[in-house]
Length: 320
Ligand code: SF4
Image (cartoon, rainbow, N blue to C red; front, side, top):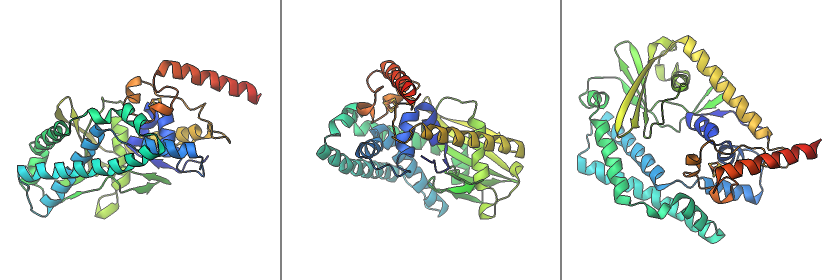
């Protein structure tokens, strides 16, 4: 099966965390693979935990608030709370509709059990979302925008993509701001993962994506990247300067990811067997996955990994 070349940080993270989950989310819907099992997996995998929906609603609310700020409309605390509640409720009810289909086909209970969907208090989620948004609005960076210190800035939708070196990249910044002679590209990470040694090279993809667009400069050293990530109850900020050399290294990283993703899909073989697709590295990944019911590692990752190795060996011997 051929992998249509698509790269984003979240695809890379999922690929590294669990190749099987990545194959089901991003691989099998691309090819002409119409088996009913794969369709069921694909639809199950798109169910998000309530926590994930809270993070997505928070991000959506932040975008809406920033877009209004660009039009000189400022939100009150009450209005912010109302919007976060509305955005979360909409996402929950949309997911509820999908869940009712799973109820008909008999997979709802498995998803409920996997994600413990019914055990989270919505008010607790809303409180968490408000805490994040309020804290973000107090950061120096957002304060500078609300106080109109910067004249030129724009907000991007994360779903925008651009083609770079033949690869479709979903990696636009959330905000771009001109400060003196540089453009600062800002990514707001609602749930910052642990520091990774690839953080800087992954972030450079934003420069590859944006340079030359919307009258922005082409030279890499005209950009500075700022990652604002929620970690341990606070917004942490990281800052990287871009240059051509870092961009070349970032492109190598992305090319190598694409090659590995293509190799992974080729392991499905003509029979689209998942037996050679590795499972998650850590059981904590499985706790966020709606596919546990259908996965050999879903209840016991170690046992599932051994079972997978035995299957892989059997297929190898059969093929000889
Ligand atoms: S249950 Fe775990 S191993 Fe299986 S697909 Fe989900 S994350 Fe991967």
